[in-house]
Length: 187
View 1 (cartoon, one colour):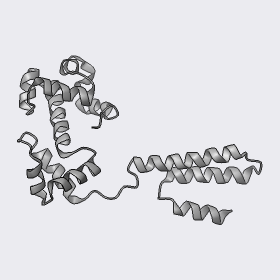
View 2 (tube, helix red, strand yellow; view 1 turned 90 degrees about the horizontal axis):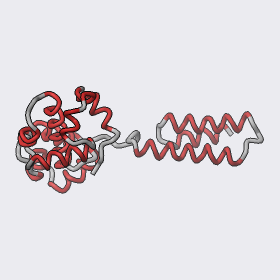
View 3 (cartoon, helix red, strand yellow; view 1 turned 90 degrees about the vertical axis):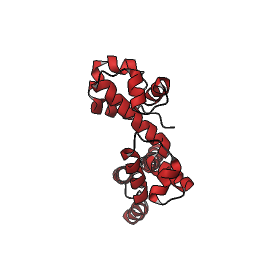
View 4 (cartoon, one colour; view 1 turned 30 degrees about the vertical axis):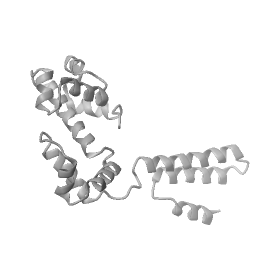
């Protein structure tokens, strides 16, 4: 029995939660020979679900290529410049379609979606810490018009600029961004 457990345990990627669930099932089976089939099946399903969850959460992901980090930093540095996928790709010596694929794979957004997200976050900061009008902030953050800015804020934060500015609870941007991380809609 112990040999089978070790064989199973080491064939699973290194995820402590999955290993703990399997260990719980083995201990339960050792302590109680009359352990029901339903209980064993439930623990097996739980281990499988935990393993799938760990994969989806990125615990077992391959490392992010350095060029993806470079592209991300380039976008962050040139946040308020005109955006162009070809220019992003040229700075890191990748083909635009390859950059698009790899960036989406590792960041979760395309480069342009990431750029608009950063601009929306900058707009959120300006809403909270300046007295600029929504229109001024929209143009300052390089949105096409105030409606474009509002659409991005509603998409990412589920609130209009006026609602965000009026609510005193959201004055601490870092605290607010942490709260909204779960609510963010991914394209």
